[in-house]
Image (cartoon, rainbow, N blue to C red):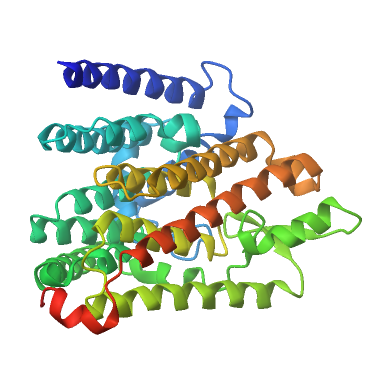
Length: 398
């Protein structure tokens, strides 16, 4: 009875929070700088309108998506104009994540209400921008893949569709147990190959996104840009420029910082790959590894947009089904990081770019809490990693 009561109230909270998101995004109710919340949707609709006329964003530096994203933009545009169609599809994907979590929580013996509640709280933490960006779609696929791991083929298909939407769900392959890797990997590879083949027939230049962002610089919101932004908030002056859909730091030292970030991320992820191949991660739940890899990728990325927290909250909700001993402090740190990201954009973004101290402090809290959560989860996973000398005996074979 208690669980049924919580379920009903969780659904009511989902309706209330999503109504707030939509009304804020369409500027029906007040929200600071609400005109910026759904600003990217105007760009999606513009791309889609050109696609209808047979013109694809081949040389557009703002385009940074795998080809299936174009299908979503086009569908949203054809459903309804003026941003309504895309936001409706985003709301449907959001509802899909909520229902997946709710169904799983009802099917478990513990009847755990926490995972769907975490997802319900997502827009409160991230802000109404949650439905004004594309990230809810690949998050739906990542959550679906993680919850469907008992059906390896289904999980592989989910991950492939996620990769066709936005590249980061490919990281989920690292979290797949060795005993399931052949089936998940085969389903993933076949779905990805067929998907890319069909999309390339529709749009010959659809794979251009693979090299389209190679010259991207250091976004002012990234961890690597923090020293530059504190210099900008102090006696120094740091020049910034709008490039590739983001404000980037323009300095002779950003190349070195970007290289160090990228190298650190590759080393950390590579270490996890080696441990997975060795069978040393078999005792760690898949959601924990998936979340860890995504956090490592985010903290070492040259770009750290606030909507990336949609990925984090979605995977954190799945982690709540089998919470690690350190789950609560990690979740609190990630919640603080997400909420300060909402304060920064769109509330304080222009003052932050201009070098004011308060938004720079907010950004510092945002990236430091994200870094601490990543370190804590890394240590948590490391504690549960099988020792090298016993991995061949304890780990299931592929």
